[in-house]
Length: 192
Image (tube, rainbow, N blue to C red):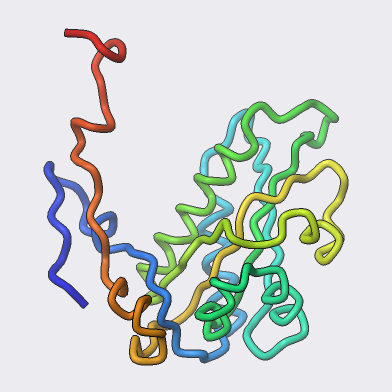
């Protein structure tokens, strides 16, 4: 792996230390370890405490893993089959009182980040993916009607990058981020 990424301002090292590799070991993720990741996600903030995030998982070597793997786009199938577990992230769009949840994807994104940071703290890696069959996913996981599908995640122990094809192997390193000045403005966009 390459040199650690350097932030522009002081932050906790967990943030630049976390990255999304594609080389996984193929070892099934122990259920207790996976539940620890979900526990971290459970504590994410949410509007009105609605906690809309929902996770459907499959551990490597199980029928649930195979079903989720079948949803992945062919490109993602070339590497995600070695993940210790696959997770489908969804969000409930109606709260327990029948009210529309204002920003279920935003809140579920916070839960995903909590999961990813816990994975990093545990010496694991998590890689979110948008390349999967979003139309077929609700049927495969029996998603309730008041839920939306958001993304899929491969999680597990790091593996040997040599298992990846040449193009992916060349990209198997933490990437940089845009400078803060490209992402943050004071007051309003385009202000002098």
